[in-house]
Image 1 (cartoon, helix red, strand yellow):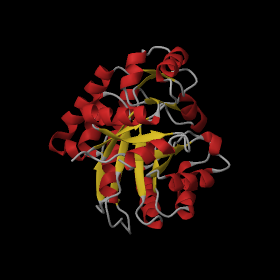
Image 2 (tube, helix red, strand yellow; image 1 turned 180 degrees about the vertical axis):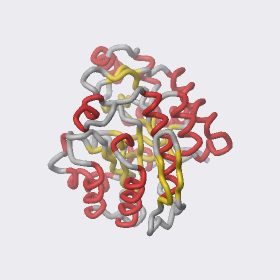
Image 3 (tube, one colour; image 1 turned 90 degrees about the vertical axis):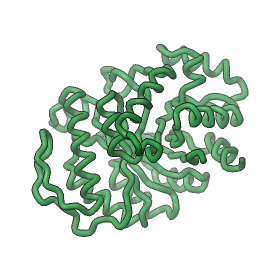
Length: 306
């Protein structure tokens, strides 16, 4: 039986003054999770905000997409994650990434290491946090973290899911081996502003990334949830024209690629639903994070009504 779809609503910096209202609206519309990004100084800080959202909602899942592990001690982070999970009645999922915005490192005085080093640090972080959340006492002497007898006095009573987001063979293979979910974006080189990226949205590239996850996961691959960060949503009856216009704005991507990959959802509700099903059939992607609320609700309603 195919894995069911899940939909997350990612709070944006435009909701700095109203994240609670936005989260409540997401819950009303049938989203599965409300998610928050992590960019130092932009919008509300993720962990206190998601805690406030937990108190203001009752059923919707809560998550980070994704926290920069360079900015956080793994023991403190596991402690916070376990606390939020308990306070929310088991609704929290922890999304982790390697960081990519040079300005944030300059602002915080943290060394901006090469991608290979940041991803290796992330890998250690994931393994440490997983063990702590599972109730283990952790001794770790690695290249990036050194811990002695770290533990949580009140470990969680169930498994807190960990999502790892990013790119590159080493990161995706490690995520396949250790994460509950893997976040994909098809993003490449970071531009000088630290936020915009080149994109690699060819279906063949995504094929390769899925294979990297599969190599790391081995026999557990069918239990790894695949997440796509949707960069644009447009509900329209003229999909061809809207896709053409999107490609002109973005550059470096063709209409055929945009029509195939899961990172852009353009078309009528029926066309978007058909695309989601096609992406599940080809790549197994079932968990989508979007940044629009009411405009996406008909897609959720249509899928769940079938």
